[in-house]
Image (cartoon, helix red, strand yellow):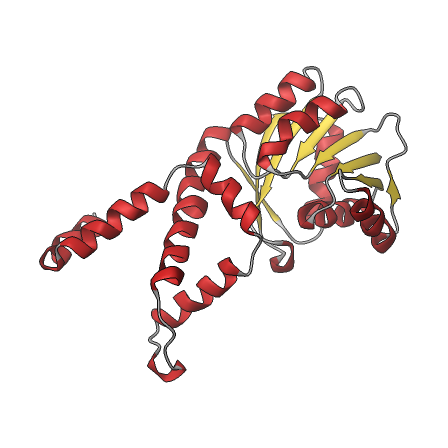
Amino acid sequence: MNVLVVGAGAMGRWLAERLAATHTVAVTDTDTDRADAVAADLGVGTDTGGSYDLLAFAVPMSAIEPAAREYAGRADAVIDVTGEMRDTLAALRDSFPDAARVSTHPLFAPDNEPGTIAVVEDAPDDRTTAALDALTAAGNELYETTASEHDEAMETVQAKTHAAVLAFALAADEVPEPFHTPISGPLSELSDAVTSGDPTVYAEIQRRFDGAEEVAAAAERVASDPDSLADLFSEVAE
């Protein structure tokens, strides 16, 4: 199967490497130097035009609609690792109305593989199945879901989580290591993990998914009345 991976960032590189284990892969990117570098590192090709059996989009959420329009007609099977389902599938349906379509979201950074990959099989066929098989061959586990279930979950596991951790990082002072507790220590490590990531990716998540405002409101409830903590604990327990 001939596959074109659109996007040569961290996720595009990861996806190209996984698919290249069993398929013929080329990569492309708006940054041609980056695409050339990834292709050279992985020993795959670059886009020379023409049609492919499968297009694999690994672009930011904000770029999926224009990217889908740009590559419409280049394949009649598409898959993505954009990380968002509602708008992504809408864009793929518009630009590839008669194509096989599957949307995926690896719930991990490439360095943390293997992990769980959320999957919405909008209109699958043997080519999209072959692409998913390449991902499971690397030890990943597929979790079949719906676009609405996925996007609602991302409000908590991404938008709210990132907001809470970053807020802690902004508010926290440095303290000697012996002072850290079993709670503060891991939270500090999470802060380091978040702030060492690509801020543009985190910004896209905050723009797309609700949740940060609820975290801020919850923090205000905690700070405004310490005497009500017992009630808040009970609310969480429920």
